[in-house]
Image (cartoon, rainbow over all chains, first blue to last red; front, side, top):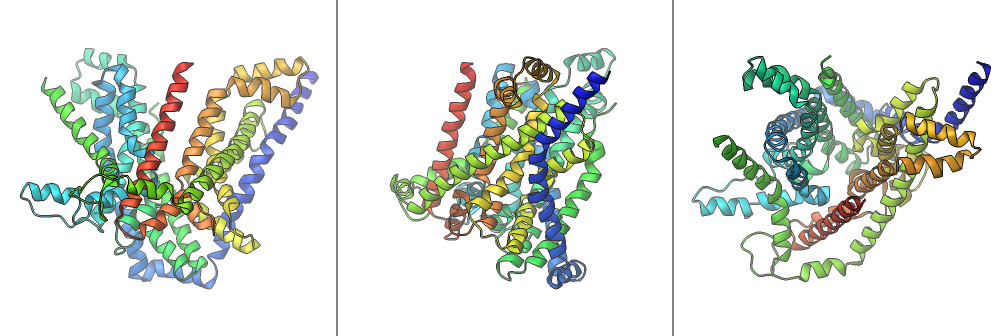
Length: 276
Length: 255
């Protein structure tokens, strides 16, 4: 017994040595900066920013814009990606599934910044989309530099991402379960409601939360496609930093952003766990 | 039959939506004119040539590669070591420590970048490609930790113990036993990290000063509005990534 205990003790000492580098790194370059940011946000500029979250229409408006955009994008992306993932998992022959997924993420290969730019090409006043509409004799759409353009750009990106995560949770379902449900007399709708959906929900919820979190914290897409009116929260943060050089206000607003994501996580966490 | 027709129709629509911006981007990078919008006035390679001859862009590309490779190596080393620790022994406070280590995955890059910026300001550290690399290591280390920890199991722990009984030193065990056993996971973690660093904008934007990475350089091109040169940069990045993807895919298939 003592020999065993001493081996365990030696293991523990060794493990402590292995874990130390990342622990020190995380403390120095992640936890400490968050603490610095929290302290910085207590300087006058930061306190003013916290107060403005309550009483300035500009700040509150940016926060609400961000919430609205992120929520819309999450719902739209799940709605578009779920059927795609389902069709690939259920109706595409197994040996083509990999190719179908690889094709679905082709646009990931351009850089993130360029992808938003590419949408501004499509949606521009003289762009491809309006060219087609004109060809069909329809009126042109003023989509460039608008909320709609931001939602389209985000939805494009996250539909690809969600198709992958939802597909991954759908193919893991044992086919026997569906056969068993059919044997017990369940129709397709009942099978979906009582068998497939509850089992796929953790994957969908995880993907949806990721979408929401990435979307609400992104500066690039609203800045390129949104056109400077109706700012989103990250745009407001960058504005404090860039034009006014007010790092205290930027820190305060970043903490508000973090709080929003944390609340979203707490709300969706129970859906991410599988049914027992 | 209608089921299949509906499914095929949906697939066609959604793939059209997914491909549309990339197709337009690439197509109008050949535009023989000043605006990358219809009509296509003719085909030219002049914008691609202009990009390849642009010293700033090519410099930024080299910076991006250097930052991506070095920060990913750092992230992989930190993540791999910590993953081994969590698998081989029960450390006090392990759950809390692991939670803190993977926490950066759920924090917005903007917040991570701002926190580092505030800290570097406070310490009087100048901004450079090194500070960008630190930022990218912060976002990629948790990823490497998670991937390595998932690949390490009881089999690896036993093989390590056997090697130790045979008198191998810790470093040799790590290099000759553990790393080869989970080589595919190490490669996957490294490539994912490189991809994320390569494509990352906001941290690089906040934490660099004179030398910048490619996404930041492209960002400054965007200020000029729609321009076939930007299309050409985007198309070239697309081409390089596609070739890299094919190379990795073919390399994996040969095994």
